[in-house]
Image (cartoon, rainbow over all chains, first blue to last red; front, side, top):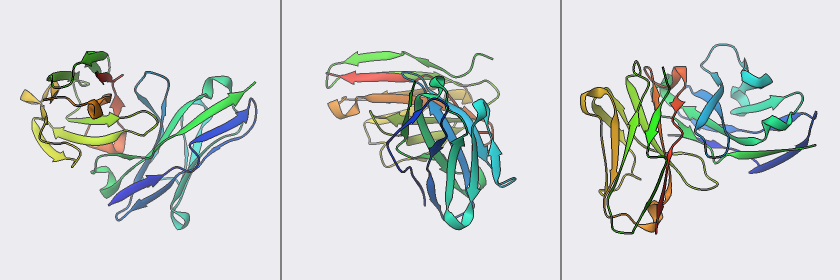
Length: 114
Length: 114
């Protein structure tokens, strides 16, 4: 079984502030972990992925995430928020080294205040 | 490569009618996935194909839902006798050999049942 919990359905930050979006996972087998971003009325775009190599993963648009097995976490961060980062962010897990279909969290809506 | 295409983008139908959606994946991707997303939620897995074989179906996929992928290329998702609870965004994604490379999502088909 695999599942994802995203803490905080809404996060609001000021432009230039640190972005931290939280994700905890549950998987009975070694997980592959992903962050996706969704803009209104669009599909999901891959931000970054962890596939059992380096635990600190860098993605597009300045985002990065750290895999912490002891905490079963994969939190997404960005040092300085930009207005264009406002979107919905989804964490997802695929068990069995990526052979299972992705299971998504319920999402976190990021607002960036000027 | 034009990405994953979904048609139509929007569909409004009366309760009880049948609807069919189409997805054209990236041509070299052998896996194709269908997800459903309701407002404020993450995508929920429905089913996936490897080439033309349907390998997994979610319990969400009631007997009113059927999906096909003839010849391992495009896929169709049909909903028979639509209900108001079927109103959602239906997302298609494709990948090469599982989640390790991430999925490429289409822009989705928004279904409204009135």
